[in-house]
Amino acid sequence: MDKMIIKCKKSGKIVDILQKEGLRYNCIFRSLRNKDVKLNGKRIKENLEVAEGDTIEIFIEKSTPLNFEIVYEDENVYIVNKPKNIEIEGVGGLCEHLQAIAVHRLDRNTTGLVILAKNEKTKEILLQVFKNRWITKKYLCVVLGETFFKGETFKGYLLKDSNLGKVTISTRQLANSKEISTKFKTLKNNNGLSLVECELLTGRTHQIRAQLSFLKHPIIGDGKYGNNEINKKYKEKYQKLHCFYLKINKINELMKNLQGKEFINYPDFFNQF
Image 1 (cartoon, one colour):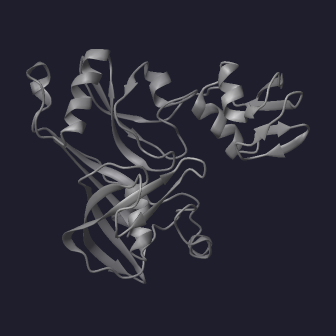
Image 2 (cartoon, rainbow, N blue to C red; image 1 turned 135 degrees about the horizontal axis):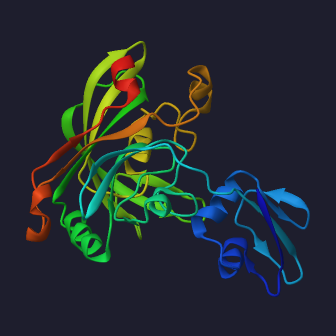
């Protein structure tokens, strides 16, 4: 690992100070998450306020080759099957390795299909696709408890707390909250767990994870919105959530070869459940 030592010239949040030193946002938070940041000699994991004269030490992982599958490629896009424990952006992420541009994201430990643009023009076209909801995105997950979802739409309101890196769900609209919609369909129940298909109708931060937790069926392995005792019982450190289906229903004429094309990639837990 590489080590950087910074003597703070003024007060501020650690992330802001490190970004001004040229470090990328995702790289900084990865180091914080792994307790690879020291403030005045003490290891920390939160984005704390620092004072002038404080010393920050940060240990940065060197980029290593990634093991991932390119499901589809043409002159404009990559569609990649993202493994767990890998960022899309930032140092060592998929975009850096492929020299591509992210147009949508998956959480670090959510696996599955993600679209990356090869150029700015493609990025703008794909952003329009996502903005207008001209794309179908479906996920598979394993949740706690027996569910009996029939493909109905569940709505609510999501409020993001950037300081905590977490969201909360409410049945009523709150200040700064955003409406969310997700379709849930139970595929199978087995031994107190359920295999659930989720279709995103809106694409908010942590939407599926937080909404299922709100419905009392947290995703197995989810350390943020799940049940830690249950995760230990099943020996799952990462959320069993996988984007298995993408279909672009409408797109600019320049990329018409993608219109109506389905991409399907099932996770290992689909056949194991």
